[in-house]
Length: 383
Image (cartoon, rainbow, N blue to C red; front, side, top):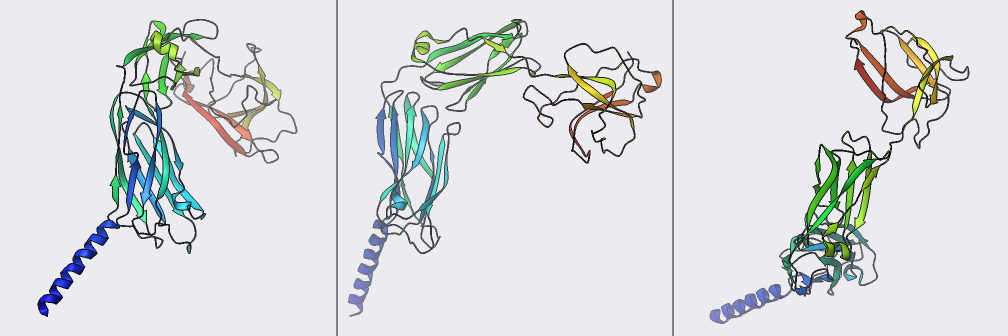
């Protein structure tokens, strides 16, 4: 009798072990193997097989080779809402620069329970960039019970994408010239080029003695037909800039590049203000800065060279000048950036080494309370 009981117990343990193995929840890339061609767009499903468990939430990270593939989108599937219950997608990101996608979703409500039928958690769309074999590899996979506890021993089935019929990479040249708005040459420009589809970026080759720029990319590796390049072009002192974008066309690939992409930098929005000897209007509130003012005068906006009038200001004194009109050029007193250019004359010997500070401020109507928008301090030197 003792022998019989031991046999029954052993059989029961074996059956239980088999049952536990068969019921393991599984997350799979489907189809698991794909053969594609360069430039082709394709989709894969991320499918969950509950294996007898009730699943309330799921999340994963999926890695891919970003030299071979580019992720286009990642969309919610019907798995967790298969019974009509609402869900919350709390993570849906992809980063082509890192070659990874992240997804997380959970059912909503405490009493709704989980789902036990298999289904598609998410669908991912890719585009083939170049030839080779890319793994679609899971990482940080988590499935959750309705209680919030993590389901242990989840099985993952990764995927493989192989590109066939690929052409070897070919050079793709981007070049042109940079000019100022008055048609003069902008020598030694700063040109940064970014593939907006992959976030990869490069610095174009330039020269201190020329307004020429160029960059040689590899079609099939750095870019493919249909991707968008962004050119961020700036003058050497970064004061003038322009951003240009273009989509790589098939004919440009056949010709070997984007040629004669000449760029003209617009004149930055500027305005000039002149200090005057006129007193500020009586209804303008004085600046409430707690300081004694040597002057409370007007300043006029204009484009001339000034009237030639001047005033003396001791290095210990403060003078205020009030704008007679609002700022133009799409700017307001509060927008950035602001630059203040100071011109002073007749620096006395005892003033050398002291500081001159110019501030651009906004005054609150009624109270005259001061908000400093920009400040520039310069040490006085002999001329």
